[in-house]
Image 1 (cartoon, rainbow, N blue to C red):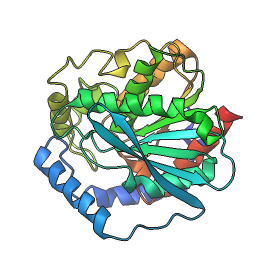
Image 2: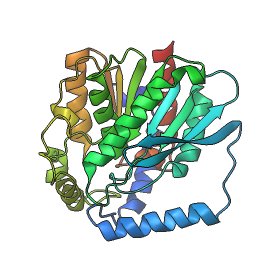
Image 3: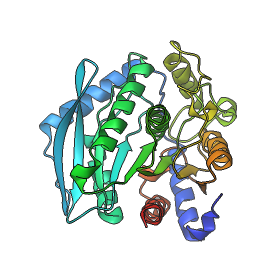
Amino acid sequence: MEIDPFSVFEDLDVRRARRLNHVLAHLPRYHTGRRLNARIINGVVKLAGILLPKPRQRDVTIDIVKLRADDREIPIRLLRPQGPVAALYLHFHGGAWILGNSQLDDGWNAEIARSGNVAIASGDFHLAVDDDLERTIRDAVALTKWALDRLPEFGTDRLVVEGESSGAHLAACALLQVAKRQPLDNVAGFVSFCGAFDMSGSRSLVNARRSLIIDPASAVHNLERLTMRSRATTPKVSPIFADLTGMPPALFIAGALDPILDDSRRIHDVWQRQTGHADLLVVPEGPHGFERLPTRLAAKARDFLCGWIKERLG
């Protein structure tokens, strides 16, 4: 079901977001296809994480555990609100498959932990700056299996899986692969913010000439680099081409100005047709990654997410 955005947002929210977009239009776009940029940014972020003081999160504890996967350990940050939780919430960060880490999302995850009354797990999966997307997907599968296996440790039998942008892609890929080995009865929902589900490049991305925040042509080049080792239209790599039967209820939140908006629209339609449980919220004046911008649109989208989760757990 496509949700009327003006049942969630007000005209004033949209006008304020439009004013911010006028500013963003004059700023440089990030080129996701450039690997040197990613290595430099990841290095700076890692150093800052070591040297800078860690901000404390109100009413939320943070612990770190390690998951052994392939030949390395994956750190997992666990954020817990006070008191019992309704579910475990597995978060996959965004960053075009090549940027970011779980610590950067502490503030985002702490807010959802408090508002949604859920424990959060967020892992540092392999960043594909080496273009080894298959290894990144294997890490996502390992994290999802870990979360399902350890639900009793969190005092719950319910899991919500969520991702932003490339993280939504990894989350969907992981659910599809796990579903081949076991039913997903304990997965209460799947949530995507600005997700990418067609690694061959959706029409809206390929045809985009300009966009806010990310450079469309470089984003297409990034997809081409990441799929050099496997055919981009295989279900293992592109969830849009997969059989979604048996998948949990899903919520897709996308920005109306996002060059990969078609990804969310198309997979919502397929998910709804094959499972009967899919919702789509297209956010007016929302560019790619709008949920991280300092706008009322972003805040209300997060509130809507928490309300949707509570309904699934209800």
